[in-house]
Image (cartoon, rainbow, N blue to C red; front, side, top):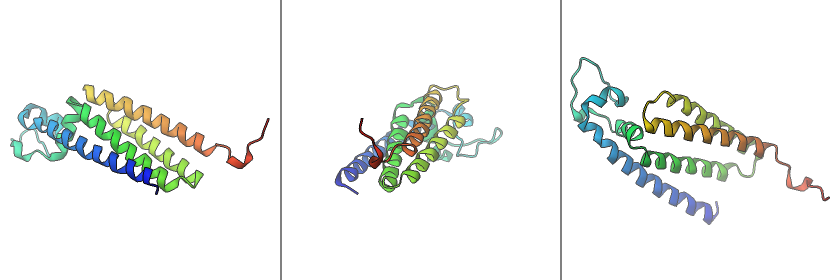
Length: 159
């Protein structure tokens, strides 16, 4: 791994940590909104007939709430995580064309599947993530195809 790649990973990881903390902080607003627990507390077991306290809300539900209603930091968090994943794949598979293309294809399919999970959201954040996952999925799949079918450097012909 080159110094440039290491520096990129460190900076992206620092951004990811900061954005994750900001997302968690913004999502803690769910504790003050008990009417939203039924719709946003997916990680906490919420039953219609059961009363809950704010202390019962899972920390993961803070991220869901923030992604739905305050999507700036969750979007930046997902963007930083996506960059880290792509950079890691590049470092691991840059010498093997087929493995890199397969990595990008799998990542693209994962993004497209993620689009399906947020596609029915009536919130602004859900719509933002749907578009982001769709665009990233298509770009990753196109990138995989271009990477796989690129001409090896020794076979270029001169005109």
